[in-house]
Length: 478
Ligand SMILES: *[C@@H]1O[C@H](CO)[C@@H](O)[C@H](O)[C@H]1NC(C)=O
Ligand SMILES: *[C@@H]1O[C@H](CO)[C@@H](O)[C@H](O)[C@H]1NC(C)=O
Image 1: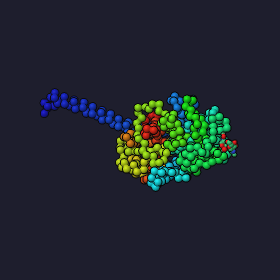
Image 2 (image 1 turned 180 degrees about the horizontal axis):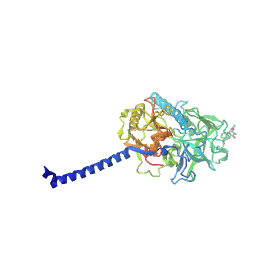
Image 3 (image 1 turned 45 degrees about the vertical axis):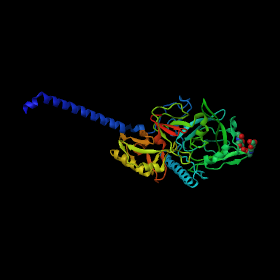
Image 4 (image 1 turned 90 degrees about the horizontal axis):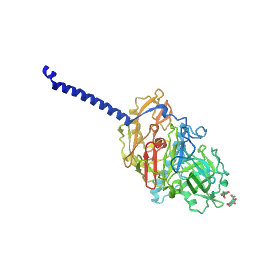
């Protein structure tokens, strides 16, 4: 025995074994660290709070062609952030629910009508457009000479409109001077007999009316907000080199509602009168954006046309829009940390999902949300919980005693096996450090459509190739 222990072979084996186990330990540790990096976000609490300083210049042309700068209405780069009319985080969420209700209503109505009329789809007279809290704003030029207007940009509606002099009914207070058509040499009223006037029926859900030969539009939003005015055309200026002559939009004479202090809405839906369709010759129904998160100190962008896509943008096909102008995509699955949630694909298939720039919090089918919440709670169990923020966000934590936290990543897989990681600010909605909530919500009805909201889209490069029938996602767009 003694001879064995002292034998060179044994020594060799012993040394090899020690070396090997040292090596193995090292590699386990390495694997472990890699797993933490790839399945978890380590973030400072301060990085989840709204930014207070704007780091990018808000004026001046963008480096990209055909691009507008995008501001979060409450963000540090917005001139609206200190306004009383800008909703608080809690108000934002209650307005968010009214937007979601009106989207559900509109889609359900259409599905019903679809079933009855087969292919002949007509919108109900009072379809209730979706408005919500209008979080993201762009600034465009209208008229000749051009006047700058801050508009809420909205992929969930179609008609672009702005408040207009002489405000024959009434105008709410806005930040920019109210557009005066008599000062624009390129402005003209649209006649009642034009094709575009008749297209208003499907765009707005209300038949146009006629006043003194001029086409009059009416647009109601789900929350009792509305705009009524002359249908008009004028020159729209996106950038000095991107000028759209004869752009059809609403010259709002009677406007009321939750539009904040913005001058109106920029409609990016799929309908014939949306800016996307009206500029098809110029931009080929192709646009992209990046929405800055509320905690980001810089601006995002809204770009028209395809000037080259980064290779890390992956495309998922659009799904049938069910006769609406919304953008539908298919979710295949969701992961939390290293765990792929056990959700039957039929859960997402039955309802479908839209991507919407105006909905704040992503809405999931109830079965999907409950699986997400259960797994998220499990992986967050080391953090003390806090009471629900409201009826929408029910999974909250008190993180006031922490400066840095580690949270599981949340990933979505879309049709075409496109995997998209949500950034940390899209996983947690931070009211203050003592109330930080999982930023997802469940629909109340299993048949309601899913909605990918703007909190989860934040910082992603989102590419709408409408003509090509596909939607792209890439990391780090802004
Ligand atoms: C009707 O239209 C004509 C021609 O555009 C215009 O001169 C007139 O002022 C309009 N009348 C009213 C009541 O707006
Ligand atoms: C547009 O039409 C209305 C109604 O006829 C009229 O009052 C207004 O003056 C017209 N605006 C311009 C700029 O022609």
